[in-house]
Image 1 (tube, helix red, strand yellow):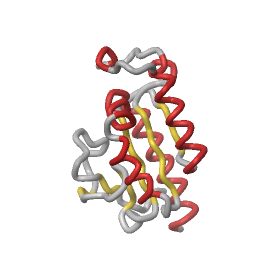
Image 2 (cartoon, helix red, strand yellow):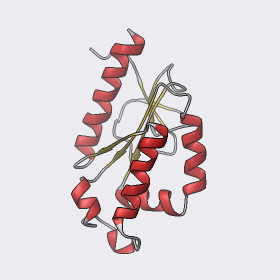
Image 3 (cartoon, helix red, strand yellow):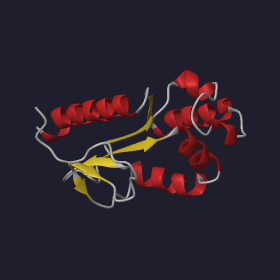
Image 4 (spheres, one colour):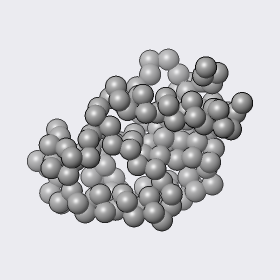
Length: 143
């Protein structure tokens, strides 16, 4: 079904796929070969999301600006929505701001920029979500 190669950003520390094309991406952590400037998926751990939205906000806004011309951009957070809100994730002790502030930022990004946000129940589910998004993109834009 899927006749495309997944591109993994060189900065991705624990890639979801063992096989893939390792390449520096301007936007996101994962893309499709030949469509790196059209589709990107950003994968975030809950702790990394805190850092990105609070202290790394300027850098992330630049990435979002680059993604505006893409056909599709999404953020997949490796944590359930409830676990995120209740700070029931590894490293949550260090996240001092209330979670509802971060979800407010996320949903504002969704409304303002049309960025799709997915919460997943961990690595396996994240991989499935990204694969399904790539399959849907493949059906619409590549075939």
